[in-house]
Length: 316
Image (cartoon, rainbow, N blue to C red; front, top):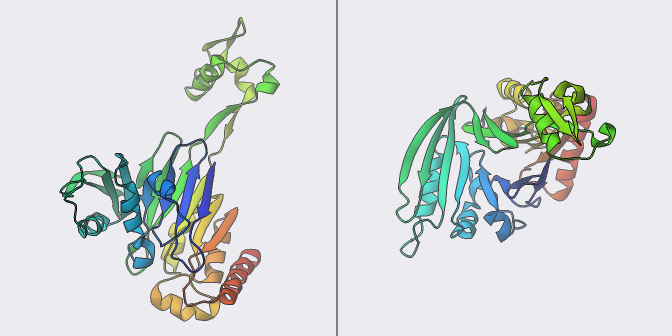
């Protein structure tokens, strides 16, 4: 399971933190100016996911640099084409005569097309940008228990929407088996995953064929969390969103404008409240969360916007 939390207040630029259960690191989505992010959270960010580099999504990258210096780890930063040179430019805007080699290392992964990722690195003390490789596909980040994929949406520039997908896991009902846990459980799960039904499993001095014990196993579907930021409310974007995020548990979706400001949404390639609600309904999202509202709105305007989003969920 993932725990996902909006770290920015209503009046601040957007930032969302995703934390996998039983995992040592967290994952920062967007670098808006969110005062609630602690120094420890910056230092424990194992990867950073940027939808695009408009100022309200990238302004707080300086805090990432400031608090990660000296952690002596390699941090992955994901985003659209051009992000690598922008990361380097932000870093090089400071003087680094006292920086030590190995203080930090950044690997930047750009989704340059729907199925191509360009990978770069930038390291102290010179912060030279070096291209490492090109990867086919849209898997931008992967750990043992989950992966993060991206799709490109139109915001008059390309923006990335991210899906955190936990892998399905094999679970056992120990109580129903009548046995105590032990190494046999892992052996049984391995046999199940490898489709080795004849494997002999020893359980408490008894021997069984693996398929005799499969009855106590089941597949637990992996959790899914989506981050969909700035995008035009048009058919092409909506088709991509539906294809990529259908049936996700939780999705944070930009809902920048109230319905009465739909013309502004169209002009600025943003989504608006009811349309964001409709696309979440179409995707069958269990927990859709509207975020990232225009700073021109007061508190009562945002309350109305959220009502419009929820009404679209209910009525679509």
